Length: 256
Image (cartoon, rainbow, N blue to C red; front, side):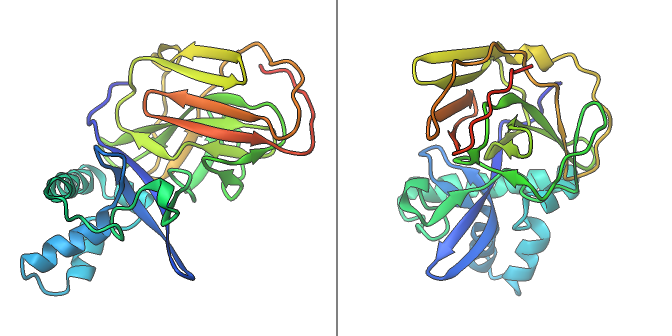
């Protein structure tokens, strides 16, 4: 599962008073999240282009799924906009409304693909694509952890971390186009469980449609001891760390 680019993309919910909107975002080097569509609008406006909003929607759409549907050319344009955003940020005047910090409450990280075209496991069984949660999700039981593959058009494919608690699928907030070396780790209190990412390296993956998500086989980890509601799980890999919260109901399934 060879990677092709180091760019990391995601989806964030931007809040401007009572108005909320989802946006395609990229992580800047200082940790801020850049709204690539709005930044592309600003770039085109500076160049004197007519109708910068419509042109930006076509070049760098405000949806990660739409960007994946655009294939390699759309990905290349998103990368170019990210380079522009980094240079703007280095000048020190990149506005917060197009690149806030996640700690500011102006933006909340969502599942990387909030509404995939299809959600299924590698064995062909389907999951409810409308029951997807993201970082900070409340879950009903100890999670199974895994990687998810996100389909794109042409020579494009992404990877994110994922978890299942029986009813719900959780997707990480950030998607990378490279499978990095390292481990996928689940930690709660002083307990840790981990598995090498190379466990998924040699799987024979089918072709996926743009925006389709496939959950790879879950890791086989020893279950944690009985846990109290409210305990926080920390799921991490080299791309991000994601927190999950155990809810009020407390079944204790064995991790498979």
